[in-house]
Amino acid sequence: MRVLVLGGDGFCGWPTSLGLSNAGYDITIVDNLSRRKIDIELECESLTPIQPISTRLKVWKEVSGKDIKFINLDVARQYHKLYTLIRELKPEAIVHFAEQRAAPYSMKSPFHKRYTVDNNINATHNVLCAIAESGLDVHLVHLGTMGVYGYGTAGMAIPEGYLNVKVDCGNGELKDLEILYPANPGSVYHLTKTQDALMFYYYNKNDGIRITDLHQGVVWGTNTPETMMDEKLINRFDYDGDYGTVLNRFLMQAAIGHPLTVHGTGGQTRAFIHIRDTVKCIRIAIENPPQKGDRVQIFNQTTETHTVRDLAELVSRISGAEIRYYKNPRKEAPENKLTVINERFLRLGLNPITLEKGLLSEVMDIAKKYKSRCDKSKIICKSIWTKDIEVDVEGSVTPINQSETVHEIQG
Ligand code: NAD
Ligand code: USQ
Image 1 (cartoon, helix red, strand yellow):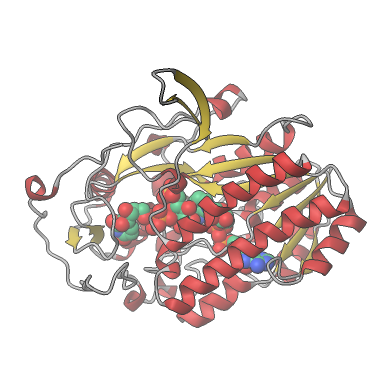
Image 2 (cartoon, protein in one colour):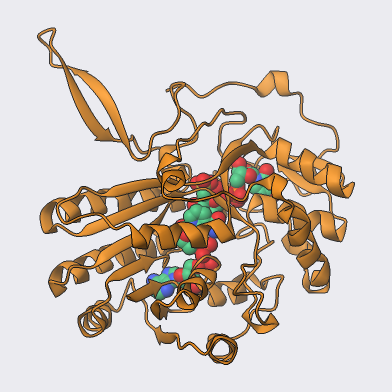
């Protein structure tokens, strides 16, 4: 089966491409290497020494005997090249990772807000438009985010994309409706993902494109069985204040003896998934495509939820690291409850990797191995959501008085 992986040089895309290639899929990666250019802009590299894409592909061929093709193409800007590629390759599935994915990066300045919107929305629209134009029956698998829902509910678990509601027709009659779960983005990056969802709805309705949208939680971990086959295949590990995600950051901070950087009270509950489960979920999604005529299939791609505070306490318990509380650079609820339905992947055979399963120390070991590559000045999050928020580089060692700030998000 031919699969085109857009954004296949990135943190999720690279191990997914290797995992699918190893399983016998014929993989072509498209990437404009913009993430590597952002490393140069931010003057901060992956903690792990990632190799140039040509070396990655050469080593993969040596260790697996399998070819992965690579095309350097900007999905957001080079529409005709993308369209021609789809027409010629005739992929059965396209996996779309090719977006700017960091919320803090998307909030740094008007330039970064506009870049994120231009890149992400044009990329998604170009893919949809090219599939429709090609006349081919391609299954599009997109990486969305849990953040499209916001992180609070009226008290129920977040469903997989669609919500059953009753509407008052005005004459006392109540009608049942099924709607897309109301979007509630928390950053310009998350805003682009909510726009993607509307584009999927439209192109599915108008052109009959078969689409699976995976609403993924925060990814942790770094290696997969394939990226461990040779050190030159190693996956990226972002630790900086813009691209590093919370659990990997805490594990890396513990490994280098930096205090764990909890924002606010740490009462923010988020959904999590290990990178190995990301790879498994994408394969499951490809192997269980929607039928022609089906609406957009939405899966919550997440395996557990935790508060940031609980994660900090867990990492501190296993490592002895100090926990430090920083003024939150983001505009987000200081405390929230989050329960998520993830039955669809479980029903299709996913056996989740949870925090208990011992992979925390594996991540810390990787961080220890490459700690000489860490630039400590890049650790603190300096991207603020609005001008009235101050950057806090010192933090406080005592937990913020939670009773003053706790409130639950309503509806
Ligand atoms: P990443 O930045 O490591 O990878 C994205 C890749 O896409 C990069 O290699 C980049 O160069 C490429 N790219 C970006 N814009 C492009 C364009 N216009 N044309 C061609 N290539 C382009 O990000 P990631 O962590 O691998 O995330 C992949 C996807 O998964 C994103 O869409 C993200 O929103 C989603 N996601 C990630 C996480 C996470 O925790 N990492 C969680 C939920 C969802
Ligand atoms: N946080 C800290 N300390 C830190 C870093 C983060 O307390 O040092 C807090 C943040 O304030 C936030 C939470 O941890 O409340 C999560 O932050 P994050 O940077 O780990 O994740 P987020 O910005 O939500 O984005 C990541 C990915 C994004 C993906 C999203 C999934 O970068 O691509 O879409 O996770 S989700 O959060 O479920 O929407």
